[in-house]
Length: 280
Image (cartoon, rainbow, N blue to C red; front, side, top):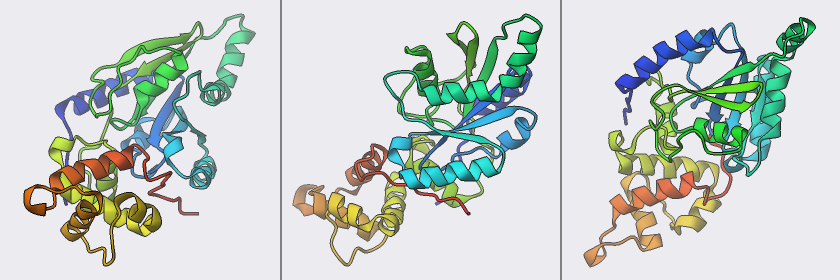
């Protein structure tokens, strides 16, 4: 299954990011804790090469804790701060403290001149990874648009978090060619790529196959599938029979099943699952 999605606004967003980078002190790069490798835009390494950068592992409550800790060590070996993030009711103190650490030297230089520096941070990431949610949590109130679909933020938005901290919300940014088919599928699993441009039944089949390898017992319990599991269409039909997703005459309702399999995975109803582990 080939997946390609690069709307015109993303090309414009990339040009805007280049212009705005000179104005910020630190970059918060948000990725999905379930797939930290696939959900990082490789173009950002070159774009942000000269900027302090913090990797924020979003939706960490949906990933396995021990795997997230391994990813934190992985990024730290690359010289990057890595901080797990779960949308809380209060402000995420760990992220605020990470920003303070990243810019401490610049703040101290300005303080030595008698100036209280206003820190400016840019929030970057692929679509639907939770950038606006992070900003709203840091601000302590809803100021940036959020939705459970990609492509909501279309322009840059400055948000004042404290009297001396400003955040720049940016549109989700993919790269023009998704050459890694597995990474593209995994981004589609978590909703990064619009449902309209992906064959949902094929995507759900692929997800079920992958989840059976990672968490067989959880998949069997949730979807009540029976041996032999089958592959592809047969596996999805197995889940239809197990969950009673049937049409008139007892035919498997695979269209409905595909939507529900994806929704239930995205909502964490199979438990905490990490799709990727770092190469130690």
